[in-house]
Amino acid sequence: MPAWFSDWPARGRLPRLALTLTPARTGTPMNDAPITLPLYEAIVDVELPVELGQGPLGQRRLINIVGGEFEGPRLRGRVLPGGADRQLIRPDGVRLLDALYEMQTDDGTVLTVRNRVKVIERPGQPREALSHVEITAPAGPHAWLNDAVLVGRAHPRLPDRQAVRICVYQLR
Image (tube, rainbow, N blue to C red; front, side, top):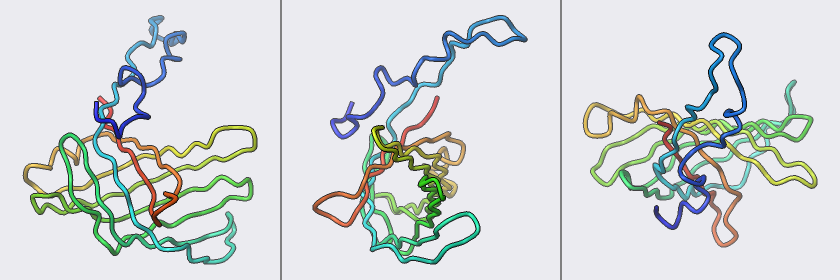
């Protein structure tokens, strides 16, 4: 396991709380939790937020994506400039992020990434920033990504760089 996936769950599995649940219809335990496989870590360079004003659901803002890089066991390359992260800060403080951007692999393939993140920060509790990631790839060596079920964890801005760290995992 690469060192940069230090937050990868133990044994590559999601928490096994479901083991104690028994579905009413089948009477059998739920013990088929998906396995998580590291896909890539991205360092995404961003600009400062642009405030868009208050909307009916909360405060809106936009963060432009200006570059970066990504690397994993099967993918590596660069984050292309031109994407953006649209954010909604709800009245309860929960942030809903919807990022759309492109990444170019080392072989020249351009992938479109949509990352929907929910960030929950409450006093006395650890920060949670979990996401559902969708990747659209053209026909070719990376087309398998079109069918992959992906989840991610977003980490706060890096202290020495105007960037965020995103770890993406494939569920199997």
